[in-house]
Image 1 (cartoon, rainbow, N blue to C red):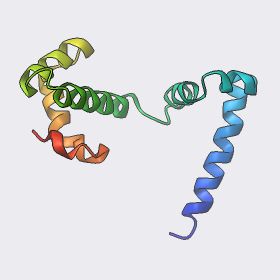
Image 2 (image 1 turned 120 degrees about the vertical axis):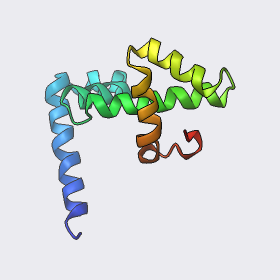
Image 3 (image 1 turned 90 degrees about the vertical axis):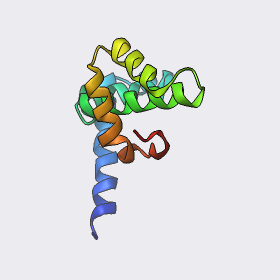
Image 4 (image 1 turned 30 degrees about the horizontal axis):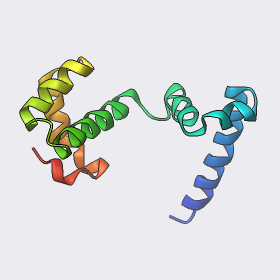
Length: 108
């Protein structure tokens, strides 16, 4: 697609303008740059709550399994309780969404 680069450039340009307006001044962004941008993207729904949930579940599972803190089943139970989502939802995220976020080795 020829215009992909142009769309990306315009997206970044518009996003930077919106960030300035959202935070009021550039210094506010610089204080905690990455955190503020992520909060902005979530607030403007450029990253959906659902996508954020998938990512958090997968990262939490990855951390628990990588550090051998517990088994996969125990990790699912723990995350389910911590995030107040059903065990079935956690298993579903593991099964259906890990490849999108490059979590191939967590496999259900």
